[in-house]
Length: 152
Image (cartoon, rainbow, N blue to C red):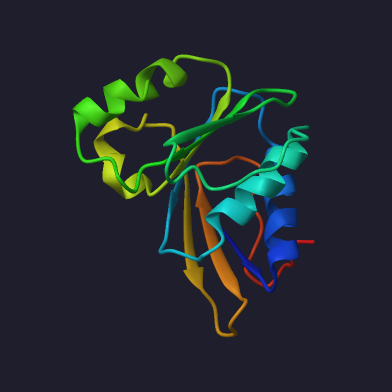
């Protein structure tokens, strides 16, 4: 597991870009962490790192937003998902079979539906108001990083 501490939204975006450089399509990134922890900010950097030019915003009310990049990005918000019927109705399983990168916020609500090889990203508040701690597991290439290293 790699642990990163960011000190601003800009650093959080930069970390998202660094992770994007390690992706080739077909990955599922499962975020856990409370509201306001920076999941969408990280996703904005990820999308930019994958070549998406459109604005990234939370898919809270739409369930999924799609962004075109060098690989497609499918950004899910599972906060309001309450069961398997909801997952089927939003097409979640169809996206799993594609070649895009799936970003799943509130993944703890759909844990049983996630593939075994899912990249896990737990986000929590750090010591200062804008500090965020990202614990990333399942992504080769970040494993050698430590919490002392900057996201820049």
